[in-house]
Image (cartoon, rainbow, N blue to C red; front, top):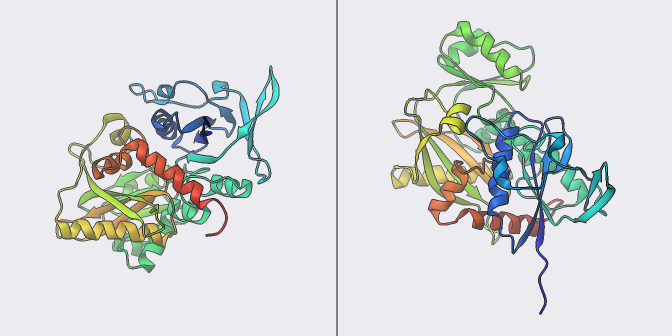
Length: 364
């Protein structure tokens, strides 16, 4: 009887961005959900300083414990290296006691990295050079989706509505004309960050300078956006297995309740109330799903994405942002939307790995 070799999946997480902890939580969920009969998971953590380590052990240790966030440190495991060499797909382990050794080759990488140095095309570029298939968007799509300025420009070019905004590059203040055009309140945010990091709601122009300084601690390029009063609606998108157009999930509505806006604390520590499917008319639901699919295609995405919208009381829809590696934590909307749509979390992971292996690397 022939035993089929399990697919070797390197789950890479942690990283140098402000979203390090959420990446760890997402990875813990993925490691726990991968079918051990089909997949051999290799957990590779990246410290905040950029050191790669073999982070073996119980995936539950990457969960949020009360208000304590998980973290990958240099002591989390032996140092590991993945060379950007398409003729050698092995992970090399460097252990102080045992010396240098090689693990078996990696079939596919699941880069569960949120934010800079991961979701922005950097690790995707390395994996393209190494010739190793990976889950999710390619270099361009990752970079374009990570940078909210270019997401908005590409969406606008394709007729997908976005709200009023201004871009402040390093050292550039908001002009008087832009203040008048945007009005108050506004949201000030880093152009290339996620998980609500560095975002401030400004209701008085006197507070703008401090808000911009907060955002620039993460990214020198800052967006100032008009606050759109409306419902927060999210949609999951998956690449088609049959090579057809991308597929959209049922929609989720995030309810703010007592929270003023959807900040980090509300997302991950307090928790939010949500409705899946969102209670919207069939026409409005279909329009949002179509915008989600079009945004995915416009940015040339692959694998998966979560697309976020605002819907006003009179039925206008505005694209907020797209996440090419959305949160995969137990409370994350992406897996929950697909579960209600009919695709359970382990099946979502199976599909993502299959499409990544089929796509491979290089131009498509």
